[in-house]
Length: 164
Image (cartoon, rainbow, N blue to C red; front, side, top):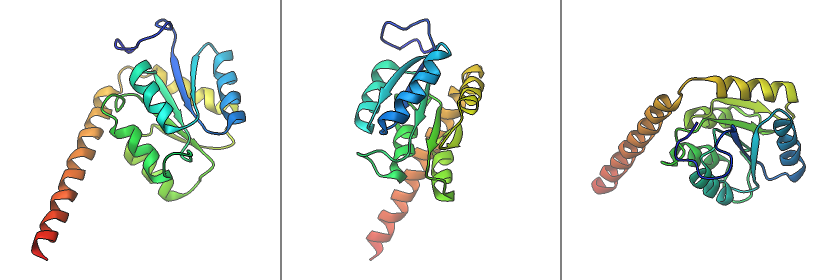
């Protein structure tokens, strides 16, 4: 459980569902609530970002195609959020492409589920991730690696610009 979480749900596992499709969001929420999870919903990245920082959920279910962020950026924003890079996330999307999967896993997604997802598959994956002891150190390493990689690319680009 996250010690820095604020809110009235300190004894429950909290899952943030980030999905812009209202019906899919409600369906996912219902499935999870029926199995004892406290569920927060966000329909865009701006709201999700605020919830990540304020509520510190135990897990995030993240759609790649949100109205206020490009597909390629969605996972990176999750993985590079200093306040949330240790929160595991599952990508749930109908975008079943290799670049989407690579982006998701490189940004730190624990699973990539193609929509439509059966309730059994969803629950199985959620339970697996929530049962893990402490994934945080691994995700911090990924976030540090990403930052180092970004810094390196920026430095190379700057050197090339200086030479021109």
